[in-house]
Image 1 (tube, helix red, strand yellow):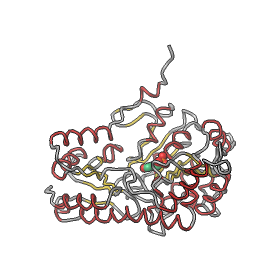
Image 2 (image 1 turned 30 degrees about the vertical axis):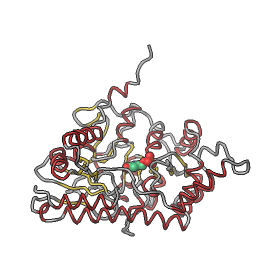
Image 3 (image 1 turned 90 degrees about the vertical axis):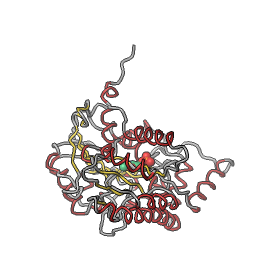
Amino acid sequence: MVERNAGFANLSSGYLFPEVAKRRKAYQAKHPDAKIISLGIGNTTEPLTPHISGAMVDYARALGKKTGYSGYGDEQGNAVLRQKIADVLYPKMASAEEIFISDGAKCDIARIQTLFGRKTPIAVQDPAYPVYVDGSVIVGAAGKANKDKYKGVTYLPCTAENGFFPNLEVIKPNSLIYFCSPNNPTGAASTKSQLKKLVDYALKNGCIIIYDAAYYAFIRDDKLPKTIFEISGARKCAIEINSFSKLAGFTGVRLGWSVVPSTLRYADGSSVRDDWNRVMTTLFNGASNIAQAGGLAALDLEGMKETRGLVDYYLDNAKLMKETLERDNFKNAGVKVYYTGDSPYLWVHFPGWSSWDIFDKILDECRVVTTPGSGFGPAGESYLRFSCFGHREDVREACKRLALLKI
Ligand SMILES: *Cc1c(COP(=O)(O)O)cnc(C)c1O
């Protein structure tokens, strides 16, 4: 018999989203007429914009003609799109050869883990997007879980007390550091000086940062960095993972990119970028050419105007939610909303409550689904994540109900 990859046995079961779905279903079964609204969605809800979807329609139609047909493209992505990303998003920071187009950020995070040895220590923000750790466990870079922490992983608590930027001193030398900003789930967007600290720590201690910038388009404060490569020294210690998913509503279309600087080296001096090129050309066969046509359109002037409007729609939802969650019924119970307006997530603290208890109360009394913060890591206990992805009318209705909640 063939042996199972031991990593799978080390994974604890994906608890968060299945449990949310289970509780929602149980409530609906008891109250079949209740209209439940979800403010727990980590998925885009609004349609693609006309210029961008039009470019994909045109491309798809052309594929049906002799003159417009194309088969496999370069595995690293359409050269024009790579150049466009370099010019528009990384001027003087990265070149086209350092940009790799993919089928999405999550898929890149999974593939990137093949680059590093299993003995490489891992550090992650706590709370964090679950893929960083779960992927590490599958490839054997992290071991079995003890309670809610996996062996071989250094958790970096991001709390209200530290302004959601972790103490870096606990990170072991020669670690891989997964860092997401603006953060899912806390919504915190790191400042330049914070990221400078991170980069300096990585350089001094031989670490590589895997920087997830999937929510960069939500940053509205011009002083905040949109890419790790705005920080001097980052080209020697960082990889950026990025995506059209939250930028242009491409969660279903599937298109992302990574930036691996040619100046990034392993301990033995060899080039990380060259191995990544090898991974992408060997284990990946190129992103959909239709999606790439949409990506190109998203980065021209018309497309950028459209994606700005799309993201603004979600940010306006967030404003409505913030106003509601700061009303007296919440404030008098000590509830605190952490939200700066630069991400799609409000991170809300309910003192004296466990995440799941307040989740249940809001589901029972408001028919509103949220996401329990504890599901993203131990430091998320007593928090809920409210997502601004949703139709305006649903968000308004949810806010009306939340305004009446007695805590
Ligand atoms: C949604 C999300 C992504 C995007 O993943 P895709 O595979 O590109 O859709 C990446 N990182 C984080 C933290 C996310 O929340």
